Amino acid sequence: LVLSKKMSLFSVTAQKATHARTRRTKRPVDKTLVHECTEARDAIVRVKPMSLQEATDVKYVFSLSKQRRWELYMLWMQQLRDCARQLLPRLMDDYRAECETVKRVRNECHAEVLRHCLVVFATTTGAAKERGLLERLRCPVVLVEEAAWILEAHTLASLLPTVEHVVFIGDHQQLRPSPAVYELAYEYNMDISMFERLVKNGHPYKTLGVQHRMNTDITTNIIRPYFYPSVADDDTVLAYPDVPGMDKKCFFWMHEEPETTPVDALSRSNAHEVNIVVELVAYLQKQGIQSHEITIITAYSAQQIAMREAVITKFGRTADDQPSVAVETVDGFQGKENRIVIVSLVRSLMEGIGFLAVENRITVALTRARHGMYVIGNLTYLADCSSFWRKLGLDMYKKRFGGSLLPIRCVRHGNVQSIGHPTEFATKSPEGGCMEICDTELPCGHKCPRR
Image (tube, rainbow, N blue to C red; front, side):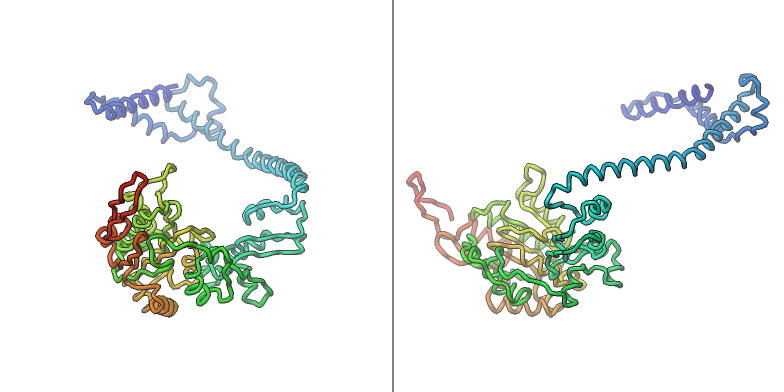
């Protein structure tokens, strides 16, 4: 009771002091009282428990002095803790046993329901976690989607003794799985999926021969020469329209501006490419292309953050508080696509090319676009660091799908202009056209005065 009163008094005093600070008033604080409460609390904490024999001899608690009462109290607390330590293991074992019973009954109920299903969907983590449930189902066939992106151990955990047929669906030329510990990938090759291991060991496989996504400029100049030699174009992609306002459906816009990555940064960024991308998006929007039809992808998270901030500043946010134009990393955009994809390569004149030396990641970056793909980067620097980029960059430059000048085309007049710096969009195409007056007859009967 004494402790309760003193601690309550101390608590009330502390609350008053906090309230006083909150209201920024200068109420006087009884420092003596606070000091006495603090000393009393510390004295109580330092009290050692009374011995069991001494406690047995106690006939009347209130006959004890205040100090001895606290010693008796500490003994009781010690006995309570000892009792809890003795009972807790048994109670925990009982609790675990009951949980297992509940889980077993639940699995039996779920298994009874799932036996009537033709297909059961699960992640590899879920399949490993619910292995007991799946064993009851005795599924003979397993289909693994995105199999080239799954760690081999995760795939193995999903294969039960009852499995007779496994179908792996994936692309080992795209992103590999990522172990949580980098050394496992770097030193022990644990970043290889079962899918890729089987393919490289000569196991029979089938490759899809027709693609339904990319325009023919991309497949003719990039996909077939460098990634998938035998892939053919479906008739639907042959009918793709031109990208309004652009002279090319695929173009590598080269620059020689260095990165703006801080020396001690863990990720990479390039402010010049951020400016290029933002102005290019603004120009495309003037052509009537909607924000949701454009995706910006980059190989680095720092560039993604910088790009998102620039996009929000220039174009605002969506109703769900996201940038009005999607900004993704290459890894995050695998398996997705969009009408227009703008790729920011980032690396320039600073300590190698990092992720851009990994062909799997390049494959993903250059195969996401449908109608138009525009790659922004210092290809001269990349060519100096990589034979792959040297060959690709030279090839695109020779075929006029790459250069330091981006060709844009006026939809109204067909005039082609070259943009060497992002600021030139404002001077050469201030309203999305060219320098000639549009002069198209409007519904009101007047001539359009815009350029």
